[in-house]
Image (cartoon, rainbow, N blue to C red):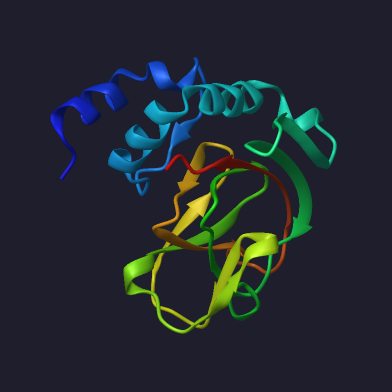
Length: 176
């Protein structure tokens, strides 16, 4: 249940720095509120980066704040469902935004995930085997936030086979 203060903050929208892209309804607003208020500087940097014309951005990494916020633009072909992996992170929150194209993203609460393959500290990732989860369309209209309590499965092709995607992932350090 979202507390009134959190919902009011979220609905008011000052957090988005004037961004004209919607946040996906699957996002945990309570956790977003908590993380944002512990490190607003990181979130302002992330949303500031997201506001630029990313259709013109080249692929690669951009350090927004050393060891705490990194923007990564990539281009790839979407994958068949069976080739996409469920994953979660402990140290970084993923802000994921499809700049061009479309893909499906699976979402599952970490406490419902089974069969993890062990945490890889160097890459801050835990991969999981096949799971049931909710699947959503990711396109240039929305961005997603995946917190340590979220398992996600990005890069899945939509109907009609593999298609090119340009995507931004901003890694934002988790505030303890």
